[in-house]
Image (cartoon, rainbow, N blue to C red):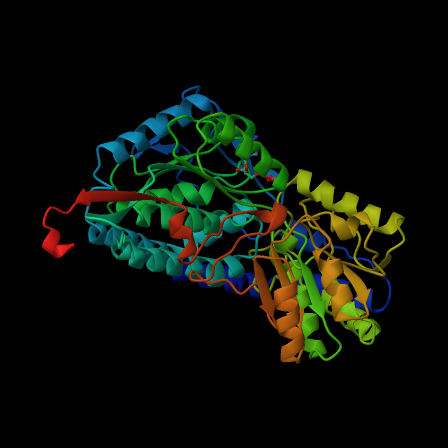
Length: 535
Ligand code: ADP
């Protein structure tokens, strides 16, 4: 059923007239006309072909309405139209969800269940996600605007892999025997921390669900997850599948709602033992403060970035152009780790700019459900307007607009792939996180200088390095203050690779073995040894 729908969808999109509209734009730009009429592309949309089944919160294993009865709309960013209305959670709903998670933690069975049993439920869930890839990817594209092919072929498989990975950890978590001085037997127990509150953003709704929920459940915690108000749909679907896989009630509670109401209630809740947040640096500061002012719950934060992508003069330039393009434009430029400052050595600068421009002009923008589309709409009007403001700022500050620079069509949040060259360090577009399809290209002369400039930011999430010289690669990898350095590649994500930020890009690491500690307490157990012969 799923694959039939997918093939229908893809064959429908193959015959779509808009492909020529894209080519028209591409060739129009290449002739220097710089105009893009997407009227056809944007108006004739593929129908997602699935119905939205789940719009209520999941609390204590059941779908429930908000205590207030309120709902809010979630929009299709292709059309700006309402997809459906979703229960709007507020403090009272968070209270109910935390009470359910508290009970499931304090009374079990989740933390008391054998680790093997927990692992089996997580594996079963991963199998269900795999089976329902088409529905989940379709909902993700509909709610978020990301290309369907990206969601289905790249993100969903990574999510399945991540749950396999953390299911594998469940029965491998154990403490140590400690060689203390004196007649004592000392052991450490690695225990779940309790009720985990998790707040996730809209740019990768299901992937963020996985990064947060995977390690929390593997270590025996219970969870209250608040999704982003722009993208509530897929987590509810995934929550349903988790219960189908045998998750006991109260272990995973999912509340939809807005940040200052539902999110703030979760961050400041006295019965929440740990908070994990992904979002903007400004909101990260707010939730850290709420956690501190309530019960001092430990907080992990994955925040914004302005990541440098450094291309040395000995790099394979064509590959660097392609990866720098991907690093910035992937997911409509809506990545916290977007390679948003492209530093290019002066010797290859002009060649790089020409090739980067040609690549951006070839970028296929349009209905994300259509085959071959690389870029869909931005998430909502707020982000759309923000990106256009930064484009205006780039123009006004004297950077050279190489291509793009405008919206596409008159409906939906589509923006042309945009490149600025001659970008200077003090321009706003070189300093702020734009979170959109705007590549800023800067020129550098030598390695020491570019390390200083790349580090001259409050952020430190990621960096890219392109060179064929191992010594330069090592110097840059060690010199850059960032949580990830990709060398001759970018955005390589894997369940096993830790991710997180230096400086104002965050606190702590997610994924890999590092994420487990976020959800564990260490208890020292000390027992006297009575028989001196065995001390
Ligand atoms: P963006 O500005 O990109 O939407 P945010 O950091 O504001 O990013 O949002 C990330 C997540 O944080 C979302 O789930 C959002 O609802 C939540 N959020 C926003 N404001 C608050 C707040 N004051 N307290 C708690 N959570 C919040």
